[in-house]
Every structure is written in structure tokens, then in C-alpha cells.
Image (cartoon, rainbow, N blue to C red; front, side, top):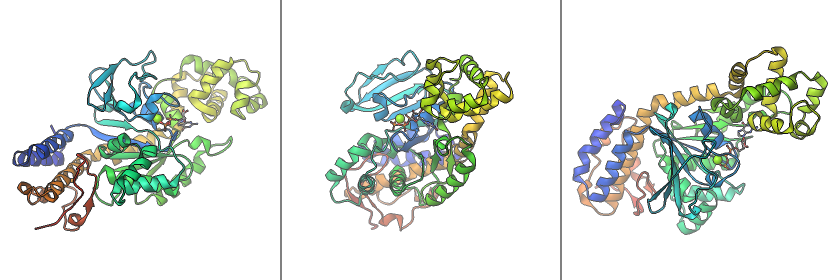
Length: 439
Ligand SMILES: Nc1nc2c(ncn2[C@@H]2O[C@H](COP(=O)(O)OP(=O)(O)OP(=O)(O)O)[C@@H](O)[C@H]2O)c(=O)[nH]1
Ligand SMILES: [Mg+2]
């Protein structure tokens, strides 16, 4: 069942045209119709270690399920969607599924038991309320600082290259075919970056957005996240710098994203997944009782924090670094110095506010959740259009014309659209390299 008025109209259109199509096109249209009834699918893209999985955990909330740092899964596309029970399926390229239990920490296991080359993606269902109207797709990071790769993948994805084999080779180093497929199938994209946006970020984002959906040139279905802003400054407050930087990066990316929002993803993950325990808070309280100068030296660097003499065990200090990093630790120590009896839940709430995540959620709601009907309907119309394009160029006559062009909710299909060339098309990748031509 489609969920909004626009999706409902497009679903009705799918139902109307499907019986008039060949079995292959019909099946693609039936898939499209089914997708209209599913939650909005948002892909998280960005460079290696930008904090994509950390963001996924914060978005899911209540738990930490996506591994960060290490593990086979960080190199695989992983989809998180709502289900009545928690379940991890490794989906093989032949379509077969291998079910795995979550590990003892409730996370996707480090070892998935299927050779990576045979895995298409990991399908995780969770009984998390947050996923009821949002499916999140975590993608492997763009690994390279090699600008050629972004350019080549862009060429390949946009169909502007003559040698798809060559481009595919480059693509597999950086955006592998599975990631490309996941992004192709997403209706919206969150692009995570750290530090300043670079030209290859712009190009990668442009390629992602274009292959995700050829909706329009408006950046209506992509959002930029400027992550790890706690790393921007040495020991001070990063927010006075983060705000203006995010604004200038939004300017650089104005054609690609609707907004750029600064974030300390780590604090969002820690607080949203409820990882900060009373014991952690107690350890921080003990450290806050040290003299001001000792505290200052202790928190001057990661190395000093772990190795200096301190009333808290080294193991606990390492845990605090994983949960909060130095910015979160300093923030907590200041809060506990001012209010030594601060309870754990109040400290966690303040860290959550300091993460910038409330604004991220608000912007995500505004950019995606509240507009999901229009985004999904536009995405499905594009899919229908491309099915028609492939059919016409393949010389199949039964789908002449675009019967849905009259009911486009977000735009109408114009003659300029009809001169656009398509080489790879969501949702069904067509083998036909096509160019629309009107009779
Ligand atoms: N200090 C700090 N560390 C962060 C932040 N966000 C993520 N990290 C850390 O950065 C590391 C990489 O985070 P991931 O979420 O695994 O990054 P990723 O983009 O999913 O990485 P790949 O999947 O390997 O490309 C982890 O150690 C995170 O804890 C942040 O806002 N601040
Ligand atoms: Mg990851």
C-alpha cells in the first residue's frame, strides 16, 4: 500500500500500465509499485571512516548494531529496515540468504561466514520504531584520495564513458557494484564528510545523486553531514567554528545538497544508543575531582589521557575515549565540575545536545521524512519513465508514449527529458543503452 496521495496516484498508474507490458517490464513495474508502499530508503555515503556507520547507529537509536572501525561488514552494503524481530541475513549474489544471529553485544557479527565476493548485501531487520518509516542503507566508504576514481566512477555512472569495463574496474576499487546498486536503489542520500569539502567529494556526490534518481537538478533528495566537528579545534569549543564552516560548505555543495549540518556523530551514537553507563559517569566524576591543572594535562591528548597517573583504571579511560573522545570527555568533566551530583541520564542528555544531533534529526525530517511521499512518487515516476525508454529503444512497440506523463506530481516529463541519454537506470538496470526518441 502506497502511503501518501502522490505515491497512491503513481501506484494506481503502475497497476494500470502493468497488464499492458511484457513480463519483464511488468515485473519491473510491479517492483516499483511495491517500493511505493515501503519506507523511504536513505543511503549513507561518504569517504572511508567518515563516520557513516556511527551515524547509522545514531539514527536507529536504542542500540548499537552497525560495526564501526573493523570487521567484514564495513566493506559491505548493509540495509537496516523495520521488522517484527531482529534478524541478520547475508544475501548472496545468487539470491540465497544465510541467516545469522546478532552477536553477544547485539551487533552484526564480525565474521559472516560467506566469502565476501559471494555476498550481494546484508539485510538487517530490527524492531526499532525509528525504522518504521525510514530504511537506512550503510555503504562502504569511498576509499581513495585518488581523484581519478571519483571522476571515472562519475563517468561510468552517468554513462559518459565509452569503456564501461575500464570504468567498472576503477569503480570496483572505490564504489563497488553493490554500493552503486544500493545507492541506485535509494530515494535519498546523506553524504557524510569530515574537514573541508573537496572537489572529488563534490563529484562523488553528484554521481551518487544522479544515479540515485534523475529527479531534477534541485538538491531535494540529498543532505550533507559535516561530521567529526569535535576534531576541528584543539581543546576549545568547536561549535563557533563548525557553524560558519558548514555554511560555507553548503555554498560549495549548493547544487548537490539541500543543506549541510555539522555533527559530532560519536556523541550522537553514544547517547542515542544508551551506551553511557552509571559506571562511566562515575569514572568521569572521579576525574573531575582532580585538580584543574592535572585535569588539563590529562585531557591534553589521547596519549596523556590513557597513560598519565589517574584514579580511574586505564581500561575505563580507554572505554571513555571510545565513547566520547577527548571533546566529549572534556565537556563531561566541565559539566561534572560545575554540578558534581549530575546524574548519568542528565549528563547523557547534555552530551546529546552538544552532539548537534537534534538539528540533524530536524533537518532529516524536514528534508526527507515529511517529503517522503513526493520523493517516492518522483523516484517511481523516473523508474517508469526509464522502463519506457528501454522498451522503446529496444523496439518494443506496446509501451508507446508515456501514459504517466500527465500525472507527474513533482514535475511533468518534458521534451527535454526525452533527449536525455541513459545508460544505467534505476530501479531495473537495463542492458539497452538507449536514447529516447519521439515518434
Ligand atoms: N571524534 C570523533 N570520532 C568519530 C565521530 N564519528 C565517528 N567517529 C569515529 O570514527 C571511526 C570511523 O567511524 P565509522 O562510523 O566506522 O566510519 P565509516 O564511515 O562507517 O567507516 P567505513 O565503513 O570503514 O568507511 C570510528 O572510530 C568512530 O568512533 C565523531 O563525530 N567524532
Ligand atoms: Mg562503516
